Length: 290
Image 1 (cartoon, rainbow, N blue to C red):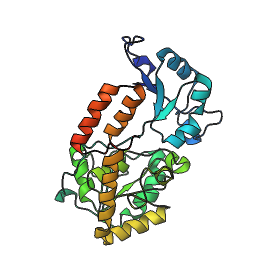
Image 2 (cartoon, one colour):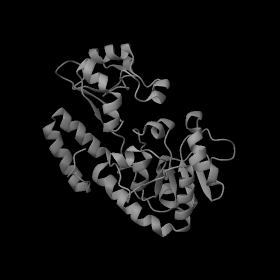
Image 3 (cartoon, helix red, strand yellow):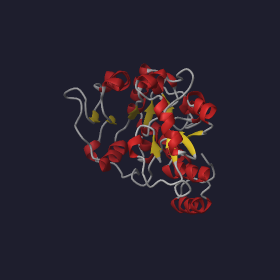
């Protein structure tokens, strides 16, 4: 699997007929469908096209949702005759599971993530503007002085998600503006047995990634603040959302499901049979293909 931004790492051992190649590419359309991404360099350039021609992939992919692919990647099909498919981020049920509560992370609001300029406005509006009113634990790098508790090891992140009453899910600006890019936290928090509410990213409901009774999407910063207060004061109301969201992730949004889609597209029938058997053994949904 290759990335258009790492052309210098093309393995010399790739030989036609011996290695199946797929590659992720940035948006390419006559008008940039997602200008915020284009401004940050996530756009196809001519040398990217030449690299893909050299690589000769079976197909192209991106983590954007299917509707986003249709809007922003259509030129790959029209100009190069290559299909671009959606391989979304997902949850890792092996590393990210319900590890139980940990009193060290007992809080009203818990958050793990970095702070940088591009995401700062959303972090302020959907977290910091009301977090001081509650017992809040924030971990990660780059935060203004006095806000973050520092680095949290991966094996402890799931414990924070499980123990905190409320874990907001805050996307980068282009996700709220354009609505077609979601983050892994949407899947990680439910797998850990935690409760999350997302900032407004329209694709979550419009493409049925989650239903309204599985995961709540706030309509605005004030709506996020109001919902945080409600569930912090009424923690028992979270339980149905936690249970339904986790079941949805295990049924449709694990990395087993994403690998299954890749194997299916590539026609790896034997490997697909083996994967489906393993998913049955682990209890992950196999009835719906992504």
